Length: 163
Image 1 (cartoon, one colour):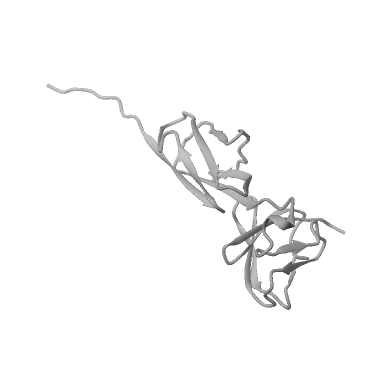
Image 2 (cartoon, rainbow, N blue to C red):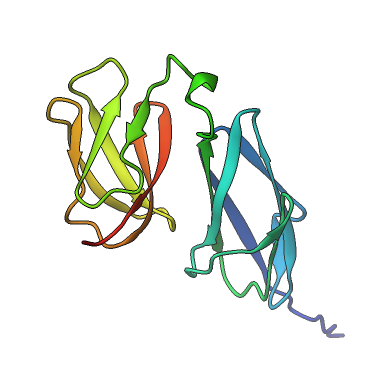
């Protein structure tokens, strides 16, 4: 005697976080076409800049919760967090960047004159990588938009504007 069964595919959500915090998944396996909720829990002094999927979608959230619609394959989710920069006094030993926004150069005041850096767009793609020259980074080649600058374990959010 043969039995029939309904085949239901499930897909995995693969979370990644850039910054200090964690992603909590409602369900790590989601059925084809269904939705799921993720929650971003950032550490004190950090804020959520953006949350994107590997499909290139920027997710809009309510507070710290974000809904992923119509999951159809293995999907990456990246949450970008940066240190709050409203008051430089909050992190006096961490340094700061200026000017922000910038047209062509970023200066890093961190106590180091030379350091390795990486710059990512808000979808997580690395756009520039290199070694600073006297605490200065040339960002002229970047398109207008918002970026994350990573220096060692520090993250800084900045905006590139055109001339």
